[in-house]
Image (cartoon, rainbow, N blue to C red):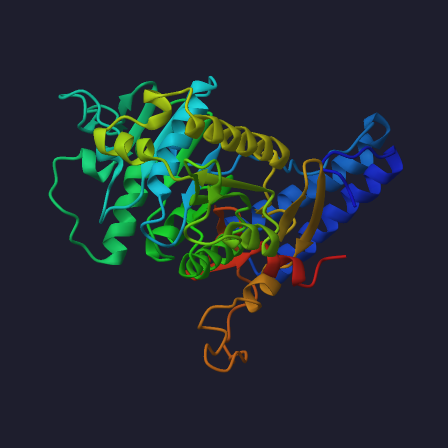
Length: 430
C-alpha cells in the first residue's frame, strides 16, 4: 500500500512519469476528446514526456496526489470541527433533553458548542432553552445572507421554533430542503462541537443531513422498553449505511434509588446493554429517573446549568468525556475520490484508521457501468439492465456525500451516487 506521500529514485520517477504521460496520451485518444480539449490533452502529454526525459537527473522525489484534500463543506460549517448527531428514531425517549444537556456539559468543559434542532414538526429547543426576550429570534445578516444563531450561556442555538413562522406544515422534500438550508447557511463560526438533535424516524431529513454534511459520530438515546430497542436498532443500521460511527448509547429513565437504599429498574433491564453488545458501541450511560431533569427542561434552563453539582450533571459529564474521547480516536481523515483529467481515471482514497490509506484508481467507464440506480439495475429482481452509454464519458465533478459516498456528474448529463463500498469492489487499474 502506498502512502499519500512516497519517495522514489530518479529512475523510478522517470518510469512513473513516462507511464503517466503514455496513459494520458492513450486515454485521451480513446476518449475521443474534441477540439481544444483534445489539443490541450496532447500538449500536456508532450510537455510531460519532454520534462521527464530531460530532467530526471534533477528530480529527487515524486509525491502522490494529496489525499488530505478538505471536503467541500458548506461555508457556514467550515469552522465546525466535529458534528455529533443525537438520535433515537423513536419519540418520547428523552433524546432532545439528552442533546441539550450534553451540549452544555461540553460547553462547561471549555469547548465551543452549538445545537441545531432538526425536528421541524416538533421543535423543542425553544422550550428547553429559553434565551432572554428579544434575543430568541433568528435573524438574517442583510449583507452575507447568513442566519445568526441565538445564543444562551455561551452555546449557539438554531431551531425552526426560533423563527417567526407558524407551525411546519410541509411535505418531506420541502422539510428536508429547509433543514439543509438552515443548517448550512447559518453562521456557526468556530465550533468544537455542533450537536444535531435529529427528529424521530429514519426519513428524508435524516438522509439529507447524512448526505449533505460529514457527520463525525452519533450518540444513540433509548429507554429500557423493548419497543424502543426495535426502533433504535433501525437507526443504528441507518447510520452504519451512512458510514457514521455510533460512539455511545444513553439509556434514559433507566433506574431510581428508593428510600430503602435499593436501586429499582421499573422498565426492565438490559436494553441498553443489548444494543451496546450487538452493535459494538464503546460506551453505555444509564441515566437515572430524576424530577430535576424534566423540570429543568420545562423551565427553559438545562439541569446541568441550573445544578452543575447534581448526580445527573455528573453522569452527563461522563458522557461528554466519552464522546470527546471517541472523537479524538476517530481523527479527521475521511475517504474521498477525485477525477484526474490528465490520466483519465478516478483516484479513490479509503481511510483506514488514523494514519493508513488504501489508494487505487478506477476507469470512469467501470464506475459508470457499476451504477446501482434504477437505470442500470432492475429494482425488483436485482439483475443488471441493458443500459447503453458512451464509454468515452468523463466526470465533470466529483463531490462528497457525507462520509459514505460521492456524487458524480458525468459529461453526458447523468448523475450517479457511488458509495466507497461499491468503489472498493470495482475492477482497479493495475
